[in-house]
Image 1 (cartoon, rainbow, N blue to C red):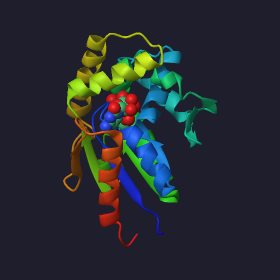
Image 2 (spheres, rainbow, N blue to C red):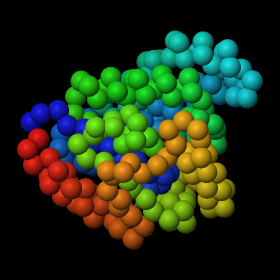
Image 3 (cartoon, helix red, strand yellow):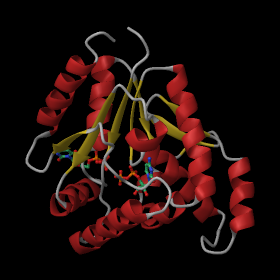
Image 4 (cartoon, helix red, strand yellow):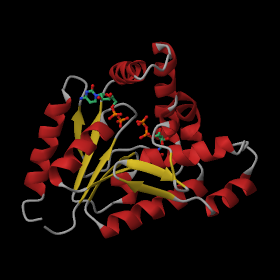
Length: 222
Ligand code: CDP
Ligand code: CDP
């Protein structure tokens, strides 16, 4: 099989990472969670006490010695496994502001493209189909209602023992949707050639099957 690339974009809680991970396993290709990369950079900035509005010089400097790697489903920030910590609500609060910074996007998009040049990938995020992998073999735009996305996130966090109210989660999701879709650089947008799937009333398996069918049709010769 030749090297293939699959892009999945959409708002928070649409099911991108859950579904991309399952498809990666089934097709035996690499899953790249680009949101985790923006979360890892946010974690680093918060740990260093960066003032996101004013410390521009410090931000560029920190990025110049920031290393991000994926290995066996884990994400490493400067060789430290931060897979759990980046999911904390505190990171969710700041990540969209960090992801709107041109220097941050420039660095992470470059890394994402380098990864996709080396192997077959399924990559999820906000600007994969419109920017990172414009020539992806398959582009999916995965959506769900904000209510349903907040409900999913609420269940997920409560299962992990993290106490956050539904209202707080709903507001964070709405706020992130707004910043992500209105920012100047590479906002969340459906690529013209992407196929939209609404997962609001679909199970994970149903969405996986829908996408596998699209991949089989589009990549018949891959
Ligand atoms: O998992 P969840 O949907 O909460 O979000 P995520 O995929 O972990 O992404 C976290 C944040 O990173 C998003 O809200 C965006 O602000 C940013 N992001 C981005 O700007 N571009 C991407 N390709 C991926 C994420
Ligand atoms: O990556 P993204 O933020 O788009 O969403 P996710 O983290 O994959 O999914 C958020 C939560 O919704 C997870 O707990 C999934 O198990 C759940 N989910 C669901 O209940 N039904 C779906 N069709 C897709 C995801």
